Length: 390
Ligand SMILES: *Cc1c(COP(=O)(O)O)cnc(C)c1O
Image (cartoon, rainbow, N blue to C red; front, side, top):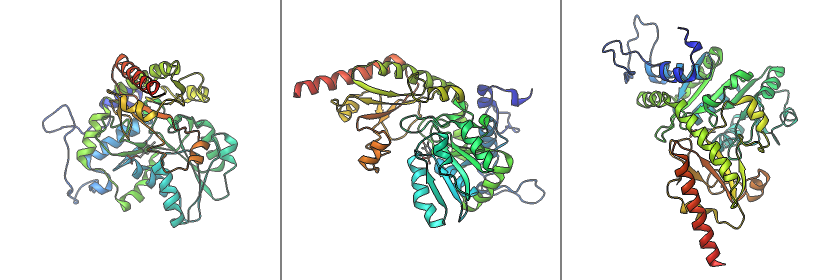
């Protein structure tokens, strides 16, 4: 059987494990050695060379899911982001970055690139003109993230890859929010796929890891830098991540379903002003999302009506927890104004369309009816309390 014909579920469960030759166990053994023989061996193994048996096996799983030749596993999502960018950028080069990206990636660029003499420009928007307008003769990389956080805006991947190819430069995507289950950017010609495996790949809020998938040639170049910086992942965590990824399709599909249903429910709710979910027909980028995504993710955001206090609302929730991160099997909620976007000025937040009453909702795998009951009782509790104080 040719493994490149396997579907996503089979790839998740079967690709890239370590075979237990000795005892024929059903799952990968963990190779914890930090010291391996060097005489008469094909590969000189060492954890920081990213080539222990468990690291290599998991990299194969990531590569297969992203339909790429090769992959690399990192100690965090930010290690995957920083190594990818620094591999293809040197002093004097320029990178065009999408207007809104993950806060950590934004900080990395604005804090570290000036020290290295790497130039950067953020686009003013998401259209072709917005990206082309920022291109310079020394531009070497174009960097996007779609869907973006927290408004779930979509960047047209076919358009990005066309711009990159015309200029002969490298295109990169932070594909964390979509996960390989909902979106394979390589299908549209994107070169480098980056993941915070802390999110959907891990999926249980108990792992911090990162991953990159690309052509063998690109991964070799990233590896050359990575072995010097040393951001590899412990084999114990590699093993745990491999285990988590076996159920990724099941989890992500359940999260997609919950998000779509809850987006529709919230959209009709009288105490909700706006819902941002690319699976809704009125989302401004629904048509692009439909073209390039198989599912619309388990992430959405919504704005409460002005008179409703977002903190009181979140505190009234019982099942849905307030939490910083996302993509776990449990549903979580946060206020971008208080967390991910707290450092932006109120004017900048307004420019980006992030209202004070905006809440980002990461759907888990719970039963839809229980999530709805929890939201409904919180709406009732807050509305009653506010009416009483008027
Ligand atoms: C969390 C996240 C990252 C960073 O990943 P870490 O594992 O926390 O380093 C990067 N991009 C996106 C979109 C994220 O959500």
